[in-house]
Amino acid sequence: MSKITTVQQHILDEERLHPTATGDFTQLLTSLIVAAKIISREVNKAGLVKILGETDNVNVHGEVVMKLDEFAQQTIYRAMGDCGHLCVMASEESENIIPIPDGGKRGRYVLMFDPLDGSSNIDVNASIGTIFSIHRKVTDQEDGCEVDCLQHGWKQLAAGYFIYGSSTMMVYTTGNGVHGFTLDPSLGEFLLSHERITTPPRGRIYSINEGNATKWDLGTRRYIEHVKEDRKERGHPYSLRYIGSLVADFHRNLLKGGIFLYPGPKGKLRLLYEANPLAMVAEQAGGSATTGNMRILDVEPTSLHQRVPLIIGSREDVAEYERFYKESTGAAAD
Ligand code: AHM
Ligand code: MG
Image (tube, rainbow, N blue to C red; front, side, top):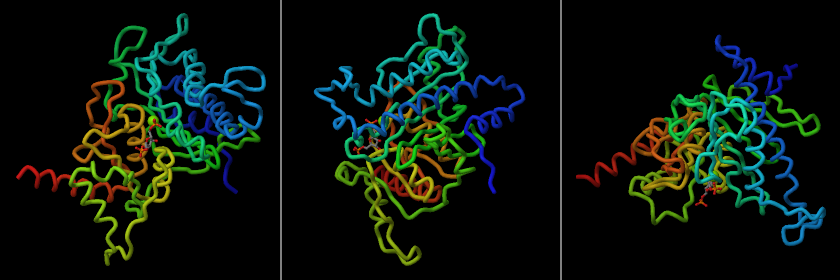
């Protein structure tokens, strides 16, 4: 019979691989996991809010009901602000960096997150998620600043996501493979369910918003035509799967193999708390992530909410996309 491992035990074991580790990192991730459990509980109740008496955003207790993405933002802030291990945070829901509350102990780490990605899918009961990225502080003051946030993706210490789907899962990496845990709601514990996830080198799925086809660059157009061809060597065209919820689309492709594309010229997805953490997970699982021109983890961050084209997934599929992209930009330059 297989061993039962909780996520805390796993993180502790990972941290022990580093001889100078103090346990701070384990505590930091433990606080984040508490926040995710609270968010998961609220996401699961979302469909019941109306039945249980919400009127004009006021619930049965007369309290104002917060939008779930705001709730997720505040929950993470409340859980992490005082955890004692962070020097600064940044989030999709905050225009500027988020300082640690006055009087709170400052730590050595930086947390960036998208509190509830794909939140437009809540009303239709599709999966959504929380994405996180953790860096070490690089500046000298006690309080962290924007410079601490604007670090290359390859410097991330840890990254991952929580997916609120038919089960709630946590998938994370600290640079030693990718591991997945499923929340047992009766225990309130995340248990190891997907040890050392590796993504197939090639998939059969492509995930892109085809409604944007007229805006795509030539390379993307040619590549998408290519995956739809009924090619002899593959024996089948690729299947299109697109939820419109990055975490859910990424998670499916990570497990089954495939490619997710939100191409340029500018892209829609954000470098620091969407593309970088998922790129680290993809690479650690044997996949890759590119803008078309360069590896996502090498993109120079210039602003907190910078967007980036994101093409991510199975290694051979991403490499094939890059060939189409580079050939077409080369062709356009000729
Ligand atoms: P959000 O952070 O405002 O939820 O937007 C990000 C979402 C991603 O989850 C998803 O991949 C993408 O937007 C879908 O965009 P589109 O509807 O343009 O296809
Ligand atoms: Mg988002």
